Length: 472
Image (cartoon, rainbow, N blue to C red; front, side, top):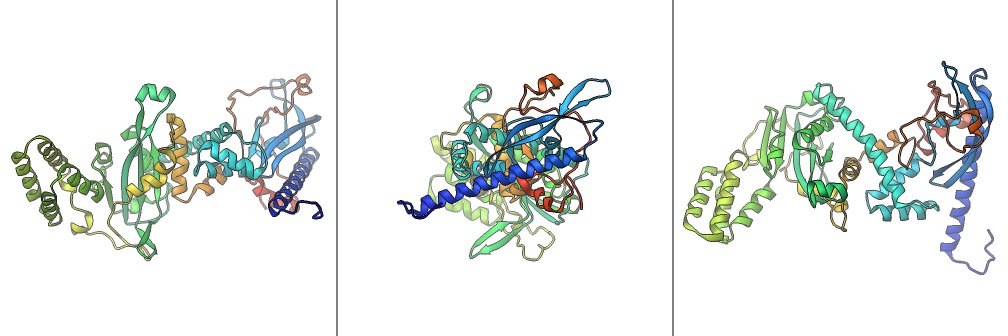
């Protein structure tokens, strides 16, 4: 590229340099993949794999589309039936067509967590110089969300058997739960109505100061789902047991708004439930309109005189009429149903183990903030409507982001992923069909192909999120 051209605009220069670098990167990837294929061909078992020519394939990467050729082999199974296999596809963990690299799918997911599917597709397309549709972005989220769901189900099963894999030890565990109503679409709207409550649970072992008057929850665990209360509580326990050594927990403190499904989590003898101060104080302001009566109610509450508070509200309900009566009665019912949970744990004199170094125990009540930052900011508003599975899959990614484990999880899950609808059936090609079919191989041999054990290929383990297939 020459700078003697008439237009000398840095934006244009930057764009041209980026394009040149991407093209060079794609050429390098093409060369590396084809050399890898040659190594596999050279070292293959020639009695099992018969060379049948080379076929083209295209893979989308963060650098652009890489078109390369790889060898197709004829194989025969024990029954004598013949089929075809691509050893390079097997070595890369690929099975099908229309693939994206792990790094590209990671970029799509990170963008989707911040923006709409259309916005994410547009930004990733601009960065990579290739066309990524909002449908492709949606499909990537569904595939990865499905893989995370499998891990969560496994964690739930292990937790139910007291075999959780969590290693972090903490004597005290703080838990908070709440829900957010999301608008539904399609079949979900017909079945559940215009909206449905998504449940969110977080757990942490304390707070760490990050600045003047600012704190963050430490070792946070988060999970969200539309599922019924009993199943959700089991999911929450699985998520906790995957991070914490639950056998070491001596005290569990649970905070919520008093909803029945939150109280259902009170299964441990060491657990203490409290109404979070936001909903408790909001109830007084919502159902008692007179400031002088509000002040008296707060006075009794902060004096820990719960019996006096209930008697005061009951007397109030007997002395007013109309809306004031209905409000006082609603507040009385709410407080009676949560009588043992109106005083926060730190004012009850509970004996709990001291916090670890660098961590503080503070009053609970961070759920409203987490409801917004984890789910509401991305999933509520903007005229967004959701299917049940679509919302659950995105929520799983958003929870991992809140736990600061999204990138780590994506890199462990993404090898080369298929952004289109998976085909469950395996199609076996006959030798005659091989020459007529491009890009559809048959994974017909169970033994894993080897990674080329060449020093210059060492860095390739991180290429496109491909897991290493060799050990040094």
